[in-house]
Amino acid sequence: MNYYIVACRSGVEDKVKKHLDRFFEEKEAGNVVVTIPVRRMIDRRRGKPLMNDLPLLPGYLLLSSENELDSYVQEVKGLYGSYGFLKNLDNSIILKGQDHSYVDWVLRNEGVIKPSKVIYRKGEPIRIVQGPMKDFMGKIVSVDYRRSRVKVEFEFAADIRKVDLPVEFIAHE
Image 1 (tube, helix red, strand yellow):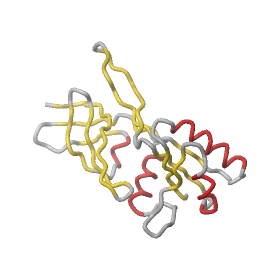
Image 2 (image 1 turned 120 degrees about the vertical axis):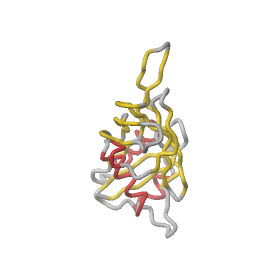
Image 3 (image 1 turned 90 degrees about the horizontal axis):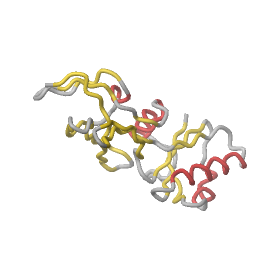
């Protein structure tokens, strides 16, 4: 499976996804799947927990395809809200190395990072029992027990990114 990333204006990922779906359908480019990666966060309103989907990588869409998409670089850049494919240092657009592994992890979880079940004891490493973070390749930087979140750090597109991800504490001290 080949993975690609399209950069777009932040906040209009849904519209750009629709344009990309229509574009690849018209071009009969095969089975190109466009995904908006999200994280399912637990927020509290008036003391009650609410599930809220927030972008995992604002301004980026993930594409997967059996076919190579090199021939569509210019056309995708011209679509509404799209800045085009992200390129590697060698100007290729297909993801490699850690970026490929990261997108593979996100898409294995169907583009939605749900809360993972964790055991946390002060002074000990967090133990992830179940959920998408069980096979995550990042580093946990901090824990916010009150908001049921962990801040993780990972390398993506040659940058170190820090993102809050949801967790469900099943044991703590």
